[in-house]
Amino acid sequence: MNSKGEGLEDCGIAELAAAVQSLSNSSLKDFADGDVVELMQRLETCKRQLSALDSRLIIEACDRSLPEGSAAKDVVPFLRQTLGLSKYDASLRVKIAMQCGEFFEPTGHLRPATLAKTAEAFEAGDISRDHVRNIIDVMNHLPADIPVQARAEAEEVLVGHSRIGWPDDLPKIGRDILARVDPDGKVVSDADRRRRRGLILGRPGVDGMSWIEGWLTPELRALLDAVFAKLARPGMCNIDDLESLAATAESVDSKVLEAAARRDRRDAGQRTHDALFALLQPGVDPAKLGSHRGLPVQAIVTMSLDDLERGAGVPTTASGGHVSINEALKMAEGTKPVLVVLDADGMPLYLGRCDRLASPAQRLALIARDKGCTRPGCETPASMCAVHHITDWAKGGPTDLNNLTLACDHCHALVNDSAESWKTVVMGKDSPYRGRTGWIAPKRLDPTGTPRVNDRHHVGQRVAAVIESSCLSWGSRAA
Ligand SMILES: [Zn+2]
View 1 (cartoon, rainbow, N blue to C red):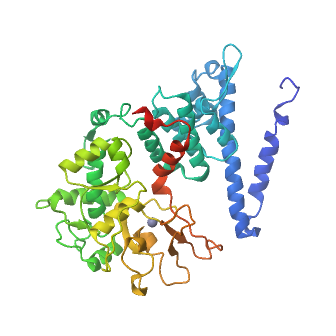
View 2 (cartoon, rainbow, N blue to C red; view 1 turned 60 degrees about the vertical axis):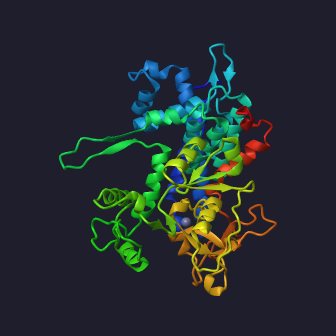
View 3 (cartoon, rainbow, N blue to C red; view 1 turned 90 degrees about the vertical axis):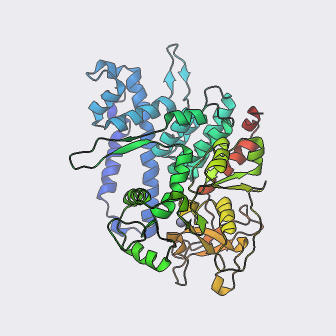
C-alpha cells in the first residue's frame, strides 16, 4: 500500500492485464486491412511505453536497495532472477535505465536523465528500445570534452532521426557525427584503429570447421567489399555448382551468370566464404579481377572538394563504409582505388553519352551522387547496384546522368511493364530533393502516387545540415 492508501490493484496493472486478455481473445479476422495495420502501430506504441516504464521500476528497485537485499546482490542478476531474463536483456534494461532514468541524489535532489530527450521520446512511445540502445552507443563514443551544447545537439539529431527512421541507420549517423565532432581524428585516430586490427582463426572443431573473428581496418574493409561485390554475387564462384562463373573468368557472360544465380541457394555468408576461397585459388590475382558492373574491381572512395580542402569530413566508400581523409588519400596513392571528388553542391559533372550502357565515368558519378539504391527504404550500397534508365532507353530515354539512377537488382526488377510496376521520376525544381530520383509505388501500396526519395544513403548530408545550421559550428573546433 502506498502513502495515499492505494494498493497494487489501484495502479492500473489489473486493468492492463484485462485489456491485454480482451485483445488476445478478440477475433482479428473481422478487422479491415487498414485496421490491422493501425492496431499493429498502436500496439507497438504501447509496447514501447511499457518498455520505458521498466526504467522507472528498475530505479525504484535500486533506490530501495532491493538487489542488495536479495540473494543476487547486484541489479543485473536481480533482474535475471526476478524476471527470468537473459544476461543481454537484463544488462540492456539496466543500461537504458541508467541513461534515461531520473535519480534522487544523496542530497534528496532529483537529477534529470542523462539523455533527457531520448527518455522523453521513449516514454511517448515514439522510439523503440532498439533506437535507444543505438543512441546510447553513439553518445558513449562522443569525446568527454565536447561542449554541453554540442552533446545536446548530437542527441537531438539522433532522436530526430529515430522518430522517422530505422534504428539500423543510427550507427552510420553516429559515425558522421563523430567525424564532425572529431574532424582531426583525436578521439578515434588512424593509429587507434590500426592498434585494434586483428583476425583470429579459431581452433578447428571436431567437424573440422573453424570459427573466424576479428576487426578489419576501414582500408581492408573497402578492398574486401570491392572484391566481394563481384565474387560473392549470386551465381559467382559457387563451390556447390561447377557451372557457376569462376573468379578467373575473363568476362562475365550475363546469360551464364543469370542462369547460375537462379540455381544459387547459398546465403550471404556462404557466398562470402566461397568468394574468399575463389580469391585464394592459384592463378587468381586480385589486381586483375577485371570489372564489376562496368568498373574495375577496386575500392571507390567519394569525398567533397570542401572536405578535401579542410582535411576533415567523412569520405564514403561505394559499399557504404567510412574512411578518414588520411586513409582515403593513402588508399588513393597506394592501392589505386578510384577517388571521386564532388563539387560544393554534391553534384558530379554532366557526362552525356549516347550508348545504351552507362560509361565507367557516369557510373562513378552515380556512385558519388546516389551512394546506393535509390528506392525508398532500400539499404543496398552502390557497389551492389545496377544503372537504371529513368525514362527507358527503348522509349527514347538518353544515357546521360539526368536520366540515370542506381538501383539494386531486386528494386530494378520492380520497374517493368506490369500493372504492379513501380515508376521512377526525376524530382522537379520545386522539390527539396531536386535532381534526385523519386519512386512511385503501385496504386495498391500508395493510392496517392506520391514520388518518394531514399534518404538512407544521405544521412551524412542531413546531419551536416542540422549541425551547420545550429548556433555551434563543431567544424570550427578543428580550425
Ligand atoms: Zn534496392
